[in-house]
Each structure stands twice: as C-alpha cells, then as structure tokens.
Picture 1: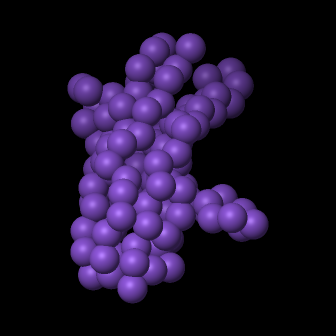
Picture 2: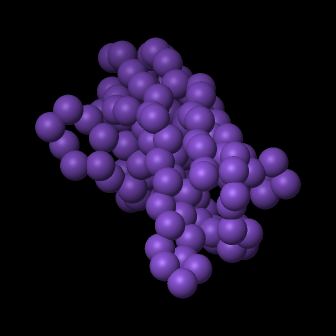
Amino acid sequence: QVHLVESGGGLVQAGGSLRLSCAASGSIFSINAMGWYRQGPGKQREMVATITSDGDTSYADSVKGRYTISRDNAKNAMYLQMNSLKPEDTDVYYCYLGWTYYRDYSYWGQGTQVTVSS
C-alpha cells in the first residue's frame, strides 16, 4: 500500500508565501508522476502542478510564475513553493502520486488547507 501525507498548509496574508510538502511511503514504482491538486467547496478538483520522476513539470496557467513544484526521489517527497499568494488560491490542496504498470495506480493524500486572507 501507498500512503501520502501533506503538510505545510495554513493561513497567510495575500502576497505571502507557503511551502507544502508531501511525503510518500509504501511500495512505489520508480517511474511515476506526482502532483498537487486543489479543490474548494462546490468546485471540481483541479490540477495545480505536476512533476514526473524525470523532473518534467507542468503548471496551471493561474499559478505559473508564482508556484514551483519540486521533488526528492531519494526521499519520496514532493514540495510546492507558493509565492505571491492570492485570496483565490484558498483551497484544500491534495498530493497525488500515480504510475502505470500493467494497470493504472493512483493515490491521494488527505489534503491540507491553504487560506489566503485579503
């Protein structure tokens, strides 16, 4: 089994910064993708940023230039540096890990709340 634990969420003023962390444990296939997604009340979960085990990254247009995703493969950890935060960034942020090996495997963390006050 795979277990994901997020940390680093909290309350910050607009313009501030936060750094989210995701720690993965369990039987993890070495070739995989990790990502951060967010979801607010009544909204669909949306992709924020993703990173492959090779280090290829992608970002939602709304966070480009403000967020940076990174990972440490040796530690099975992933990070999201969030700068210039805006009130509209307020959401629950979820860590994702997935890979394909004969079939698709997808795992999610429990989520961490990020609240940006104006």
